[in-house]
Length: 294
Image (cartoon, rainbow, N blue to C red; front, side, top):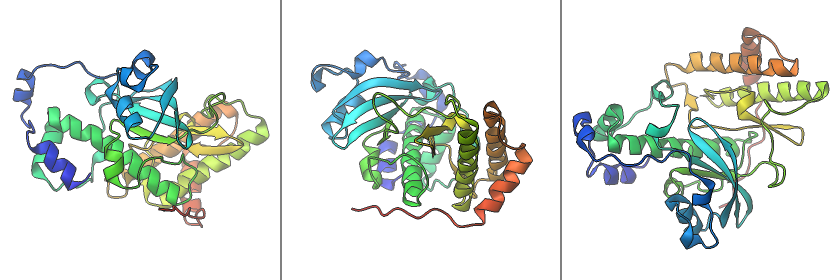
């Protein structure tokens, strides 16, 4: 999160919860209706975020809703570089997933007013947490993409100045096609051979994250896609580093979630075996880094 952005937001930051309770309540932006995101002409689109993404040239329009989760809804869109996945976050107070403190521990926020606003979850604090959640997903996507991991290609950035302008949306290349979007591994129907390959790739993916010093925080077949016999890792806003005192617990939970969720495919190991295999693989070589041209 850039200092420029923090200073601008804190000019009228309300860090006192009692003042927030007296403020005028606004309608929270939860799950958007598809009708509000589409129209015959961009100026007729009701949603401010989608109009902004079109004005910035990132997309030309929304095609369909793909999936709605606990903190965001994913939409298929078209853009100048092909098919796009637009992940549109709900406002923090409108999400079913709100307890993100375990993932944020260990983060250093140098501006005391920003830290107080976020801790008190004041209006400005929630806006900062929202923007930080989006910025974190972009930053993690770029780091993992450059490192050669099997993740969707981010389509805005790598400068935070560029992706700050898309909040509360994250844009990445669509995995699959408009007519056949890549399924989650939890929904994919695999042959025994495909299941074994998917398991090996999934374990390797978790090891690749660990080698870079990351724990995913929610690693299971629900956050892994299956496309052209390849596992693609998704959903990174809660990605955490070794600076987080909960790192080992989150890594262990990732291994447990992966092993448990793969039981549907009749393949895998128990959680402790999975964790040991991930740690062993993390000591080996990683994938070939990608070259990102300016």
